Image (cartoon, rainbow, N blue to C red; front, side, top):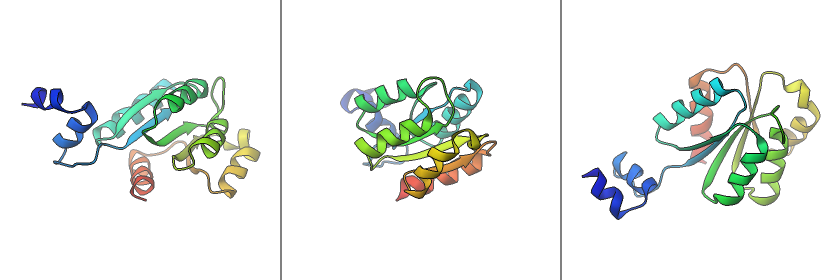
Length: 147
Protein backbone atom coordinates (compact mmCIF):
# COMPACT_ATOMS: atom_id res chain seq x y z
CA UNK A 1 0.00 0.00 0.00
CA UNK A 2 2.86 2.36 0.71
CA UNK A 3 4.12 2.14 -2.87
CA UNK A 4 0.65 3.03 -4.18
CA UNK A 5 0.54 5.92 -1.74
CA UNK A 6 3.97 7.09 -2.89
CA UNK A 7 2.81 7.02 -6.50
CA UNK A 8 -0.11 9.34 -5.71
CA UNK A 9 1.73 11.86 -3.56
CA UNK A 10 5.23 13.29 -3.25
CA UNK A 11 7.85 11.36 -1.29
CA UNK A 12 7.92 13.79 1.64
CA UNK A 13 4.10 13.79 1.79
CA UNK A 14 4.01 9.99 1.78
CA UNK A 15 6.63 9.93 4.53
CA UNK A 16 4.67 12.38 6.70
CA UNK A 17 1.46 10.48 6.04
CA UNK A 18 3.06 7.22 7.09
CA UNK A 19 4.41 8.82 10.29
CA UNK A 20 1.11 9.58 11.92
CA UNK A 21 -1.37 10.70 9.29
CA UNK A 22 -0.09 14.25 9.37
CA UNK A 23 -1.06 16.60 6.59
CA UNK A 24 2.17 18.53 7.18
CA UNK A 25 5.30 17.37 5.33
CA UNK A 26 8.36 16.49 7.40
CA UNK A 27 10.61 19.41 8.35
CA UNK A 28 13.77 19.62 6.24
CA UNK A 29 17.24 19.86 7.77
CA UNK A 30 20.55 20.48 6.03
CA UNK A 31 23.61 19.13 7.87
CA UNK A 32 26.91 20.78 6.95
CA UNK A 33 29.75 18.88 8.60
CA UNK A 34 33.15 17.86 7.22
CA UNK A 35 33.76 15.10 9.81
CA UNK A 36 32.17 12.01 8.29
CA UNK A 37 31.45 10.26 11.60
CA UNK A 38 29.63 13.28 13.05
CA UNK A 39 27.72 13.88 9.81
CA UNK A 40 26.57 10.24 9.72
CA UNK A 41 25.56 10.33 13.38
CA UNK A 42 23.45 13.46 12.83
CA UNK A 43 21.85 12.05 9.67
CA UNK A 44 20.96 8.81 11.46
CA UNK A 45 19.69 10.52 14.60
CA UNK A 46 17.52 13.12 12.87
CA UNK A 47 16.16 10.92 10.08
CA UNK A 48 15.03 8.43 12.74
CA UNK A 49 12.94 11.27 14.20
CA UNK A 50 11.17 11.75 10.86
CA UNK A 51 13.03 14.79 9.56
CA UNK A 52 13.89 15.06 5.87
CA UNK A 53 17.70 15.24 5.80
CA UNK A 54 20.30 16.42 3.31
CA UNK A 55 23.98 16.47 4.24
CA UNK A 56 27.16 17.87 2.76
CA UNK A 57 30.79 18.18 3.84
CA UNK A 58 31.45 21.85 3.09
CA UNK A 59 29.89 25.30 3.03
CA UNK A 60 30.15 25.76 -0.73
CA UNK A 61 27.92 22.74 -1.38
CA UNK A 62 25.59 23.89 1.40
CA UNK A 63 24.98 27.21 -0.32
CA UNK A 64 24.26 25.42 -3.62
CA UNK A 65 21.64 23.26 -1.89
CA UNK A 66 20.14 26.29 -0.15
CA UNK A 67 19.85 28.07 -3.50
CA UNK A 68 18.05 25.06 -5.03
CA UNK A 69 15.86 23.85 -2.14
CA UNK A 70 13.41 26.42 -0.77
CA UNK A 71 12.03 23.92 1.76
CA UNK A 72 15.01 23.79 4.15
CA UNK A 73 13.80 24.71 7.64
CA UNK A 74 17.00 24.29 9.66
CA UNK A 75 20.74 24.19 9.01
CA UNK A 76 23.18 22.49 11.38
CA UNK A 77 26.65 23.64 10.38
CA UNK A 78 30.14 23.12 11.67
CA UNK A 79 32.14 26.34 12.00
CA UNK A 80 35.48 25.19 10.59
CA UNK A 81 35.27 23.41 7.24
CA UNK A 82 36.99 23.37 3.89
CA UNK A 83 35.84 26.15 1.60
CA UNK A 84 33.20 28.40 3.10
CA UNK A 85 33.01 28.27 6.93
CA UNK A 86 29.76 27.80 8.82
CA UNK A 87 29.67 31.45 9.86
CA UNK A 88 29.57 32.45 6.19
CA UNK A 89 26.71 29.99 5.56
CA UNK A 90 24.83 31.62 8.47
CA UNK A 91 25.51 35.13 7.12
CA UNK A 92 24.28 34.03 3.68
CA UNK A 93 21.05 32.74 5.20
CA UNK A 94 20.53 35.92 7.26
CA UNK A 95 20.55 37.90 4.00
CA UNK A 96 18.64 35.55 1.73
CA UNK A 97 16.38 33.39 3.93
CA UNK A 98 16.13 34.80 7.44
CA UNK A 99 13.29 32.41 8.35
CA UNK A 100 15.69 29.43 8.20
CA UNK A 101 16.99 28.48 11.65
CA UNK A 102 20.77 27.98 11.97
CA UNK A 103 22.77 26.05 14.54
CA UNK A 104 26.55 26.45 14.52
CA UNK A 105 28.55 23.57 16.00
CA UNK A 106 32.18 23.51 17.05
CA UNK A 107 34.65 21.93 19.41
CA UNK A 108 36.87 24.99 19.04
CA UNK A 109 34.71 28.10 18.73
CA UNK A 110 37.69 30.35 19.48
CA UNK A 111 38.86 29.85 15.90
CA UNK A 112 35.80 31.80 14.71
CA UNK A 113 35.14 33.75 17.89
CA UNK A 114 34.62 37.22 16.37
CA UNK A 115 32.20 36.19 13.62
CA UNK A 116 30.35 33.72 15.87
CA UNK A 117 29.93 36.35 18.58
CA UNK A 118 28.51 38.78 16.00
CA UNK A 119 25.98 36.14 14.82
CA UNK A 120 24.99 35.25 18.39
CA UNK A 121 24.58 38.91 19.40
CA UNK A 122 22.28 39.47 16.41
CA UNK A 123 20.38 36.28 17.38
CA UNK A 124 20.92 34.80 13.94
CA UNK A 125 22.21 31.45 15.18
CA UNK A 126 22.17 29.06 18.09
CA UNK A 127 25.38 27.38 19.21
CA UNK A 128 25.92 23.69 19.98
CA UNK A 129 29.34 22.91 21.49
CA UNK A 130 31.10 19.68 20.56
CA UNK A 131 31.14 17.09 21.91
CA UNK A 132 27.37 16.90 22.25
CA UNK A 133 24.95 14.15 23.16
CA UNK A 134 22.15 12.91 20.91
CA UNK A 135 19.63 14.24 23.46
CA UNK A 136 21.15 17.73 23.28
CA UNK A 137 20.80 17.71 19.49
CA UNK A 138 17.22 16.46 19.56
CA UNK A 139 16.12 18.95 22.21
CA UNK A 140 17.64 21.89 20.36
CA UNK A 141 16.26 20.86 16.96
CA UNK A 142 12.77 20.27 18.34
CA UNK A 143 12.80 23.60 20.19
CA UNK A 144 13.86 25.51 17.07
CA UNK A 145 11.45 23.80 14.70
CA UNK A 146 8.44 24.13 16.99
CA UNK A 147 8.67 27.93 16.95
